[in-house]
Image (cartoon, rainbow, N blue to C red; front, side):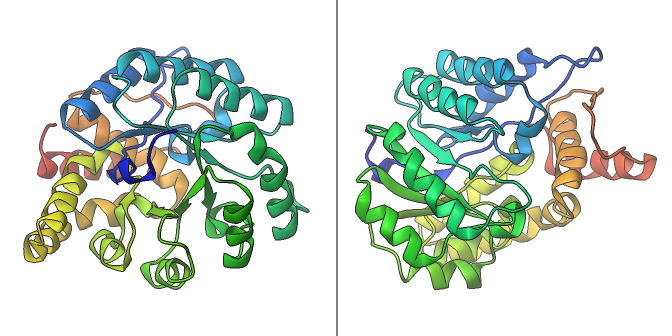
Length: 299
């Protein structure tokens, strides 16, 4: 099992680009992974909300995991979010991830409209033994998913399973700070939210973030400045990326629609195709995506 101390910094999450015929553009997947590695990010992540995981088949999810494994060195940390509506498929994704040397499993709860927080806890308690031997975290994102765990429930899982050593949140720095002060020091905490409040997240004890690729190079600069205690530089870089964060983080649908296009334009890709259901981009939205991509520059 990878040491939790190696799970640090910026883990950009992959977008899923599609071909005109609605199939996944796996070449673009490989190009994103290559870009993440070459830019010296701290790791790579996939199959979260930004990867449009709910639109992907089990076969497609497995292929993405295999591509990540084949195109990155074993020493490069890899994180996979585990999510499925079918329990059998959920277990399969854990097995496939482990067999492909994934370093960090990020578990989402299996939910329906009647799922409670206690159901969520019970699910994690029952599924956690399958992750034995692999560093495992939970995406505790009640604001996005609808259910989540309390600090006491997280501590209970921490005591029961010695590989449960990570939390990925999706919350404000105020909320995250109140959570972190209740956690053991070796329970690492990452945040998402597209890099919102990134400097404050590091100040309160978050060890890293999982942003999308569109602004990952800028977030990496911020992280490196923070490590060097150059807080003025980090804050200045954050102000430069803030217009992009505000633009794409209006909603998950907005992130997928426009964040993906900002990323594509920065990569020199002109055409972006969407898989249903999707937010249809407006002419103004595409124009603004191009303007932001231009301001951020090519990767």
